[in-house]
Image 1 (cartoon, rainbow, N blue to C red):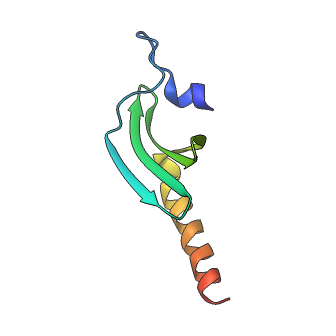
Image 2 (image 1 turned 90 degrees about the vertical axis):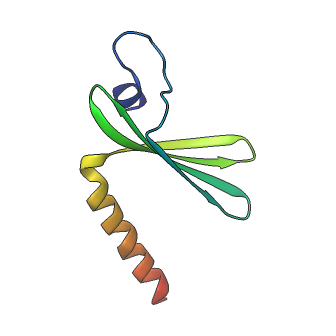
Length: 81
């Protein structure tokens, strides 16, 4: 999936400058939310950094409404627990 969103024809650069970035800091973790774009469209790259170890997922912007709705459902469930 990384290749699908990160690769662009020509140039061969893997990591392009984000259009917008947000950072979230917690006790031991930092989350980076980057809005990025390539020839296939826009996507959000979500990276969790724990003491230099990084895990990343990519969410196409077409799926953001569903992704956010799912997070809202989880938040509601958590608040009612």
